[in-house]
Image 1 (cartoon, one colour):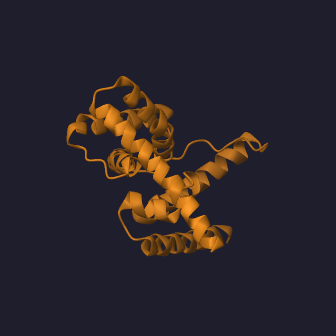
Image 2 (image 1 turned 120 degrees about the horizontal axis):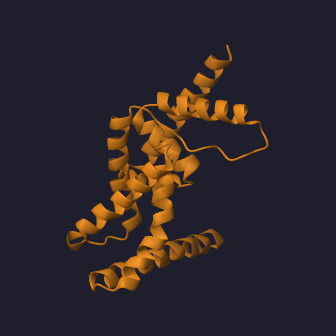
Length: 188
């Protein structure tokens, strides 16, 4: 019984978040400025973080984020809220980032946090991570970025990518195996 009530409590938190989104969407549909501001305030940092993992230049990440919201609001009158506004924004951002990949032809990551290492070592680590992620197929790279850099659960990733959770787990396992092999090969 304890597991069941814990599950109910966990689901209730997600329902509350969905209800808040529903209220924000309703406010926005009525044209209330407060609703738009709250929506952007809620999702802007998440989308900016996602876009940052797809571009080296912070200005490009901001541009991709701005374009994500511009496209969302451009078609807002046709938007039907199904409890997944965040997933919809990630989908738009993902499409824009894929276009960005096509223009840049490489995966770029933001600077790694300062951990007391000298600048040369940090730059080497950053380039190594970029190189390894760049070698992964796009479908695996997305899973790794969502999970390790944006802290999304497998279930959340499945919702954003509109695939089953078992496929997310399978792709993560493949990505880990490929990354492990690349690390081992680089040490030889």
